[in-house]
Length: 156
Image (cartoon, rainbow, N blue to C red):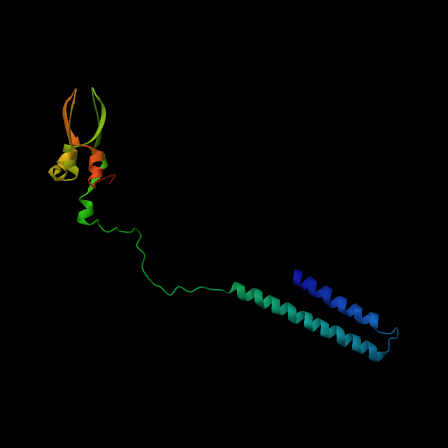
């Protein structure tokens, strides 16, 4: 819209300046020249307007093409962990708090490890813990010691 307005203003300004330089006489030949000049200005303004409109159309027609046809899975299936890594991942569900007279301790329960992870004898014996409570002797493994030996405790 503003381009049309600017083209109209410019063509009118050029037409008015042409009248100002001409003498005050108006003969048939001069009128024909004025009409031809106005027609030429109208043609130029129309060509400029059309060129601007063509630029707008080209920007609307910009299309990107995707040349890759591949199937997407609805849910990705992660690959299993390598044996060396999966053997060092312990379930966080086995983490227990045990209270006794000396204070509160956190251990990984031996029975839970046996049920959810595998043979607890594969864990380092240096991390084994035996804590006597009012309910009896609790056996398990100290989490910080296991972390120091390269094991991780994660939610599965």
